[in-house]
Length: 486
Image (cartoon, rainbow, N blue to C red; front, side, top):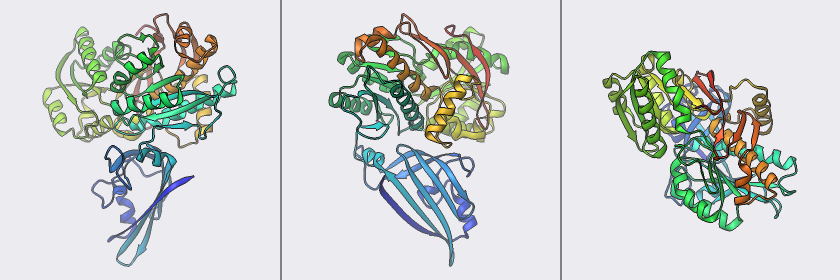
C-alpha cells in the first residue's frame, strides 16, 4: 500500500515530442529530466535523483536511487518502477497545451520510503510481522548512497533464500525472518542500525553485502556480542575467520592472481594505471594489482584514489591519457564506477586502453550499457553462467520478483548462498546461534547457482572464479579458474 503520493506539474515551451526527448538528458528543467539511462525502453535501468518532501535524519534533501523503465508510450507517457532505496512508481505524462507541453509527474512512495526518511532501522522480507518464534536474520546491505544500486537484488536474493528455507520447514521447525538494514553506504550508520536491531530483536545471524568500510565498523560489535556474521561480499582476504565472523566472499588475490596476467596476454599491454575509491578494499586491489602486474612483467605508470561516491573524473582521464597507460585496473565502486566508465568511454579511451574492473557486475553493467563494453571482470558468479543450476535459480528468481527485477550478481547472489549455508549449518548444529553454527559451517558443501562451494576447516569458502567481458547487453564468460586455486 502506497503511503505518499507526490504530484508535480510544469509547463515546457516546446512541443510534446521535444519535451519527451528531454527525459534522461542532463541539464533539463526538473529532477526527472536528470534521470540517467541508455535507452528509454521497457527494462532499461535508470538512475534518478529523488527530492525528499522533508529533510531526512541525515540532513539529505535528495537521494540517488535506481529505477526500471516499465512502460513507454512515445511523446505521451513514461512509467518507472523504483528499485532503491525503496519501491514505488513514477508516472510521467506529456500533454499538448497552448504554447508547449504540460508535464505531469505522479510519484508514489510506499512504507519503505517513510521508514527511510524518518530513519527507520530495518524492513522485514517478506512483508508482515511474522510469527513471534521466527529466527530473525539481518541482511546488512546498501539500499542507498554510492553503493545503493546493489541493494534491491541483494534483498531479493535474501528473500528467495528465506522462502525456500521456510518451505523446507525452516530451522528446527521455526521460520526464518529476514530484516533488511540499509547502511546508506556509511559505516557508522551500518553499525548503529545493526546494533539497534540486534538489541531489539535478538538476531541469530547477519549476512553482510556491503563495503569493507562497513565491515570494519561492525566487526568489533559482532565479535564482542558473539553474533554470527557472514560477510559474503568481495574483501581484502585477511583473516578469513575470526570467532563468529566469516569472510566468505572472494578475496582480492582470488580475483587478480590470474585475471591480471590474462588481460596482459590478451591485450599485449604492460603499463597499468590504478584507479579506485579511497578505503580499504580498493587500496588492497591497488597493492595486489601492482605486485601481480610487476611479477608478470608489467609496471604501474599512475595511481589515483578518490573519495567514495566521487563523480567528477575529468582530471583523472587527463592523467590516464598522459601516463601512456594501455591497461587500467579499476577498483571504483557503485556510482563512482558508472560515472568513470561512462566518461572513459565518451573520451574514446576504450579504443586503445583495456580495463579490468574486479567489481563490475550485473547491477553496475546494466547502468553502463554499451559504455561498459570491453571491460573485464573476475568474479565467482555471473548471471550468464550456462549451467542447469543457474538456469533453475534464475527461473525461480524471475517467477518471484518479475521480469524487470534487477539481475542477480556475484555480490547479490552471495546473500542467497550465505543464507542457505547458515540454514544448513544451523540444522546440523541443532541451533541457530553463534558458536554452534560457526563450528558446523566447517566442511559444509552447497550446490547452488555459482556451482559447488564448500567451507574449509579454516573458514575459507572454496569456489570457482570466472573471467568475463562486459558487452552492451550482458557478460560473455571468457574462462573458468578451478575451485580453490586462485
